[in-house]
Image (tube, rainbow, N blue to C red):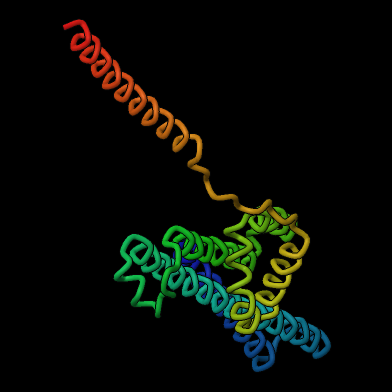
Amino acid sequence: MPTLRARPRTLGLIVLTLLVVSVIGASLWALLTFDGSATRWERLTLGAVSAVVAAVALVGIVATLIFQARETKIAREEARRIAIAELLKMAMDDPDLDEAWGPVPAGEDRKARRQLMYINMIISEWQVSFETKALPEVRLRAISREMFSAHPGRAYWREARQVRTSTSETKRARRFHQILDDEYNRAPAPPPVRPRSRRPWAFIGGTATGLAVVSLLARALGHRTARTRRRTRR
């Protein structure tokens, strides 16, 4: 959990910055309030420098808070993705739970539906990695093109493209889905799926059955011929 480890560092940085600002402010107040050997010009110069340092420290605090808010959002999205992935795994293994997500089209192939649900989890993981800049664009293009070169990946994008592109909330998310759409269009179309032929086995089975029938007929004919010959001899 890198986010949990980063929180103490973030809080420590905020406390240190506040201490620096407090010390600078106290020094400036003391220098301007009490008389001393320093000239007025020296006091003003030190005051200006202190003000600049305080401003820089304030900017640092604001940047730290923004960074912490971004980390919190990423952690929340990651927890949400993990929870949804667990629910989808349960639905993949149990058709009754699958229906809880919505109506299942009648006659839909169970294998194809499980593949679509699995691909949805893969692409969701890619999106989180891309938005956090853990997945470079070059790598995303390569793996998505490979996925869309097979029938399950192309079938998924045909169904999910409209929903995903229309619900992109951030610029980074829109860029992610644009990349997927580009690679879908560039990926080579896979060869058509041919149903497995059972003719060789049927031929073998039919041949064996035919030979057995012919053998039985031949044996029956042989017995009949033998009986006929015996009757003739009598």
